[in-house]
Length: 147
Figure 1 (cartoon, one colour):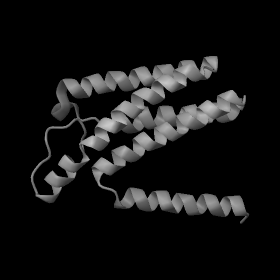
Figure 2 (spheres, helix red, strand yellow; figure 1 turned 90 degrees about the horizontal axis):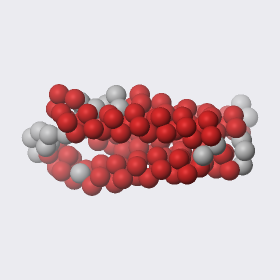
Figure 3 (tube, helix red, strand yellow; figure 1 turned 30 degrees about the horizontal axis):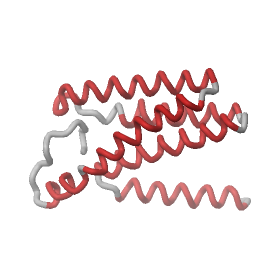
């Protein structure tokens, strides 16, 4: 095993360990972080004209947003808020496709900004969610199946 493969394997173990030990709220935070990291990489790859790598990073961000964040919404509990978030996630996916097709850094920045606002709000409710879970009560009505 070469050094790069060993480092990659070590990183994967670290991620798997974090996922296995994370509470539902933390898992969503990790999805936000993963999407933001993928967009940051795509931005750099766009600027350095690494087309294949950019496409891979944008595809990763799209998968995290569409198959992770959007799929975790609980429309029964979240109602209109869940619908609005779902529409926002769909918008982000469309904008990422546009950014990929047009090598548009400003569109990547737009999606990153939207995700940062959502992540900041998500991080801000953590004390309520963790406190409610610790006390055995149900957290305030949220939009996520497990959060």
